[in-house]
Image 1 (cartoon, rainbow, N blue to C red):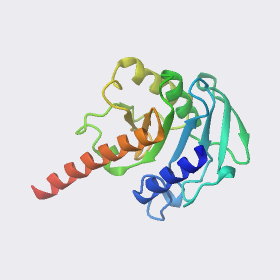
Image 2 (spheres, rainbow, N blue to C red):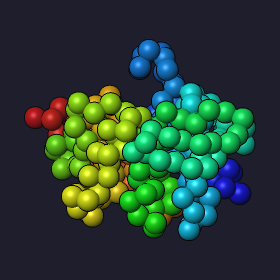
Image 3 (tube, rainbow, N blue to C red):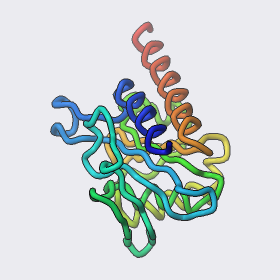
Length: 194
C-alpha cells in the first residue's frame, strides 16, 4: 500500500519535472527522491534509492529502509536492495524536527529555487552542500528559527534547484510543491509580460 502510494506520487512528480533525469540538466544525473515514515511514532522511514529519479515506476527494490539515522554524526543505517539517497541525512533531519511530519519530497524545481526570495521562502545558505552534516544542521536551524511555521517547504541554495517539501502525508507534501511551483510560474509570467 505504502509503495503503491509512493509510485503514484513519484509518477506525478516526474510528470511535473520535479523528479527525473534529463540530458539538459545536471549532467544527465537522476534527481529527486521521496520518503515516508514507516509508522507515525517511529524514527524509521523508507526512502527511494540513489539514482532512481529517472525510473517511471518505482518497485519495492528501489526503496530502502532507514533503520537508524544520526545526522549530526553523519551516520545512516539502512536495509534494502539499493543504496539510500544521498539526501537521507536531510530527510532524517526533517523528520527529527516534528513527529507530525510523515512524508518528505526532495524535488528539483528551477522555478521555485530561483524565486526563493520573491516567494519569501525559508532557505539554507548557498555555502551549504547537500547531503552533509552541515545541511542537516541547517535544516534543524530553519525549524528552530520559526521560519517553517507558515510553510512546509524550503529551498537549498547550495544545491542547484533543490527544494524540500514535507507534510503529514505524501499528498500534503506534494501539494506544497505544486502550490509553490504555480506561484513561481506566475512570477515568471509577470516578469515576461512587463
